[in-house]
Image 1 (cartoon, rainbow, N blue to C red):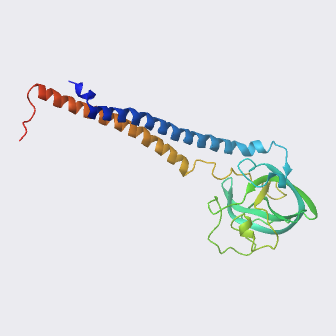
Image 2 (image 1 turned 45 degrees about the horizontal axis):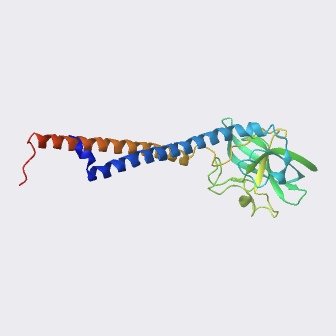
Image 3 (image 1 turned 180 degrees about the vertical axis):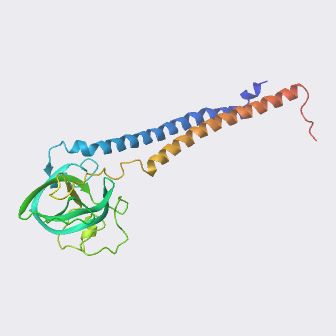
Length: 252
């Protein structure tokens, strides 16, 4: 009854099934591997800020440009504090407040944005230390419009900054600004230290869940191919049995 499986037509169907199912399994496994890699990257990024604090601080210029390896590293820079800004609407431990951002004119002539700490709403902003200072803090990449907490609506009062980046400071200060910033490991008096954040594109973003979705699609397609093969075989076997019993419909 199953001799039809050896016909040329069914040879083609069988070869397609034998190739399609392993292909779908391989592609599904590859997509699953991509998802697992992103999960591991996310976990590593969450652990990295704490690990980086234990690594000896290095001069700022040695850690630039900021990437996934240097983000969160302890950087040092020497210079004099200058203009100061508040970065509003920033949360810390569930409380709303602002970052106190002070520009450090380094010995090399460039200006480094330094988050000296977090300040609760309504509290007085402490003055920056005077004279030559050496700061040590976690290196961070410039924020973008997609960074959590940034203020992109505009209309901020003078002395406030919605996003910590060289691009947002270019029209506010005449100096050449580093495309990076640091958050002090030990906040200045009257402020709370702002912890380093994980580098962007290292979390469980939409692409990670797309990989997981593609995994399900590939495995579902493999199951669909196998289901359709069994269904076709069953229908062909029933038709062959009917012909043997003389039950096949007569051609009109």
